[in-house]
Image (cartoon, rainbow, N blue to C red; front, side, top):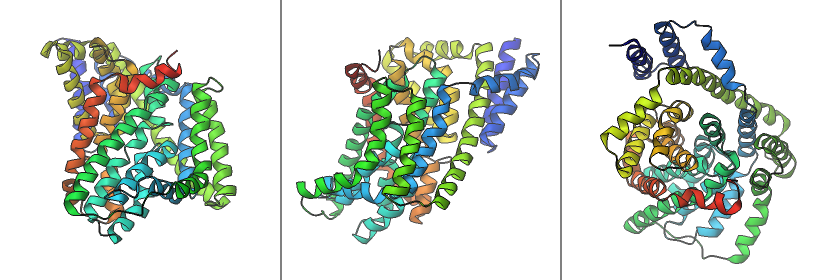
Length: 433
């Protein structure tokens, strides 16, 4: 065995062993990187140098702002308004509250950018409401956790910023525009699945559609929806950078939450900032550690070897695309979202590009795969949150989620094999340059 192969085994083997032993992900990444550097005869000084280099990026400054915006708006009393807006739009259908849940997640995801925040905020309101209306508790929880993944695709999303930075040269504005149609496709797929189950179990309808009521609820929600417009119009229109638009959106979110919706007082603002700092600390440590990990991958030519291995199995683009999705789905079962983006992107993006997948399309595929991973044990963060909010056993929630997994996989395959689902909107808006 040559030295390069041995170092590769040490890097990836030690990392996987520590993941299976449930080490904190940052420790697993850092320790495996240090062991690899030692095996290569490199100085450990390389580790902190690459960590600093990994976070020394202007684009990454958008991440704390988007996280702060999401927390402020999520705590500022907008959940009820977005639920009312969604109810006025789709509540008339069979299984109306399930449809409301899915559409509200689309709206809320554009503000929070977090599946966990969506599940905790909307789930605490909608799950009890659905149960009171005669819906099964496990079904209600399954709808909530699966629809929360729309928020990962609908911009602004700090995970898209992390991907754009890791991929290098990918436009954040183009990624933002690329997320709308896939997010809508996922919502439609989940609504079809919900409707079939609602008919089967005879779940109730809501009140008939009223244009007047929809207009009233839209006006009440306009302040929240404008936060998204500021970011998207600013970035795509070239008025601000992603970082500048995120900073402006934070100030706007603060003003709306405190003075317009009055869902937060100043004590609540400081509490929200504590949450932001805690989340941001975890994210930035992961980014720093993963930068050093990525350096080792590059020195050992792991991306090239992975590309050769996968394309060696089959030269068919269809097979390669399916393999990429399977790899990402398996990673999603054992790792959180940010580490997958940081570690898998430099390895799998070159493979995807070899079979004609655009980096923006791959970014959407990657994020949706990671979203599905958030719903699967043993590391399904959103699955755990949904079970806790609903006070339901995880095993029963997983069983109720099985039909929705199928809906999500169908949406994933459509996104994987039809590039224009992701690329059409960035192209017609000029976001791709």
